[in-house]
Length: 471
View: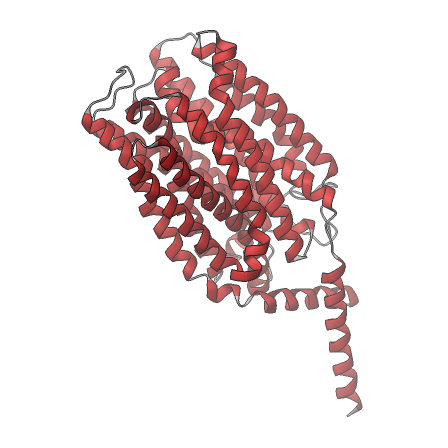
C-alpha cells in the first residue's frame, strides 16, 4: 500500500512539475518581434523571386517563356532536394548559439549577394545568359533555404509553450507580410525610378538596396535570439532523422497540404503581372493590386483568436475557403477593377492566414515525431514541411504557368497578345490555383484527428523531460 502511495505521489509530482514547466516557459515579446525579422528579411527578397522571377526573365532579362519555365523548374528541383539536406545540416549543427540560430549569421550575406546577382543582367551572349541565370537562380534559392529552414526549425526550441509559439509565428508572418508588401508593391516602380528607362540597370540597383536591408534584419534577429535546452540537444544521424518521419502522419499531411498551397500560390503570383499587363491592359495595376496584399495582415493577426474558435485544422480550412472564394470572385469580376480588387483582398486574407497555419503546425509535428519515435529532428522535419514545400511548390507553380503560356503562344516581345494567350493567362491567374487550393483543403480536413491528440503529446513529453532531469 505504501509503495503504491509513493508511486502515485511520484507520478503526481512529475505531472505537477511538467505543468509548471509548460506554464513558466514564456517567450519575451521583444524576441517574438525579432523572430519576425527573419521572415521579414526572407520575404523582402524571396517574394520578388516568387512573384516576379518569370516576368523578370521574359520581360527584362530577355529569355523566352519556355526557357525561363524550364530554368525555374530545374532550379527548384535542385533546391527542393537541398531542403532536407539543409535540415540534416541543422540537426547536425552543434555550437554555443544552438542548432538553428547560427545559420542566420552564416546565411545572411550569401543570401543577400546571390539574390542581387540573380536580378543583375550581365552583358554576355544569350547562351551564357541562360547558364548565368540558371546558376544564380539555384544559388539564390539555396541560400534562401539555408536561411529559411532555421526560421521554422528554431521555433520549437525558443519555447515549449504552444500559445507562445502560435503568437510568435503570427507575428513572424505579419512582419513577413510587411516584407512581402515592400517587395511586391514597390520593386517595379523603384526599379523604374533608379533605371531611368534602363530596366536591367533599375532592377539590379533596386534589388541591391533591398538586399542590404534584408541582411541587416537577419543580423539583428541573430543577436537577439536564444535557443533553450542546448545541453540536452544531441546530434542525430541521417538514419534517425528519417526515422522521425515513421508513423508521423500529421507531418505527412502538412507536407502534402503545404506543397499544394505553395504550388497554387505561386501559380497565381507568377501569372499576376501578365494578367494585369495584357488581359486588363494596365501595367500599373501590378503594383497597385500587390500593394493591397498588405490587407492579409488582418487575417494573420486574427489567427490566434480564430484558432481558439475553430482549432488549427478548422482555421486552415476556413482560410483556404476564403482564398478560393476570393479567386472565384476575381474570375467573375472580369475587367471591373473595383470588383476584382474586392475578390483580391478576400483571397489575400485567406492565403496569408493559411500560410501562417502551416508554419505553426509543422512545428507541432516535431513534437509528435519525438513522442512517437523518441527522436527530435527539428531541422529535417521542418525543412521538408516548410522550405521543401516552398521551393518545390514555387518551382511547380512557375513551371505550370510557363508551360501553359508557352502552349498558347505567349510572346513577351508582342505588346498585344493573341486571344489564346489571354485565355491561358486568365486560366493561370484564376482557375488553376482554385483547383490546387481545393486539394490542400481536403488534406487539412483529414488533419483534425491528429490535432485532437496534441494535448496527450505535450503532456507526456513534459513528463519525460521532468523524469530525465530527476534521473
